[in-house]
Image (cartoon, rainbow, N blue to C red):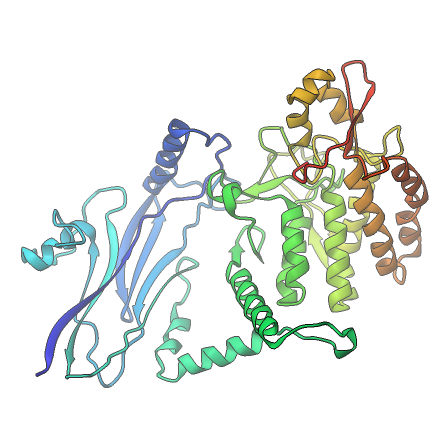
Length: 486
């Protein structure tokens, strides 16, 4: 006999806004921070509508909402959340009902015994005034014959507020699954062995390499998000930086991603470089440690106010992009410098500059503001790729024993990794720009020989030292640490 049943597909809405919060350690700080973020929903009025067989959750401003154009520590323009049934076809009827009030559908019974199903609650979907009372539920009445299989497909996602959701309806076509598979195969990364390499790679190993390359490249690209303020796509740094503290960065992390993305989606890599340049100070050339919310840049309460390695990473990322794509025209594209009420207008005007001019200013900042120390190495400032190395070493047993000075190290300390990376990157970027600006190409090489000689002196017979710190008497203290985190 046939079986009659009602199927309910449920997605929750529990918006939790990413807001910049530097203090997140410990239960109390985390709980207070979570509550503050959740309460940002009170700055908006919410609605749920059924539009073209799609449930759409939308938030619109009220009197507490910040002006969209202003820089804030969270994104003031929330995305719409949508949920649609992709199973619409001639063999099955459309969904029979929908719900968007948790209290009405679940009530006291919760997910195990929803009140609507067991107590015949009315599906009025009337509004209540809890902070986030909404959910998205679509139900469908099904008739199953013995041995019959029915496939149900749904789409749940977000779009820019008030943007069309029509793009999702093409997925209702019965043959679209095969089209998706074909498209993914066309965009996949394939493992290739050059026969001339004579590598001992078995078929089993090739399969593993291919599987892992496909998986990681797909997951990486699927991490892409859109930043409305800077009008670019990017792959966020994520982890505790983003999901706990509510910030993204540092540029070094973005560059490491962009180098890989050059070979997957070059336009995305280009966007990441544009994002970095869009945060550059037009006078000093400094790149910020991180960015957050709606156009805000942040420096960890001053702890990372002057990172010393970001210029090198940006120039490296630019080199890799042009080398991989051959897109030298990018050097003449125009990108606006950072412009914010947070910075003194006389120090940072809202200027535009070509990519080449951004690169020149970045090198100027590296040599002039970061500078070269008395040992001939690039300085460390408040941190290099290990952005906490200065403060953590100064307060460590090693730092206390050697009377290390945090202030003097920030001003006069030197970094071996910065110097090593500059020796790798600067000749590369010089070769890239030589055809368009010989003078700048020559400048990029002007310190190479002296940096090489200074670096050689830091080899201790087994490995290179890590950094040069300063004690309270401004005397040099060598940190020779093999700890990779250092």
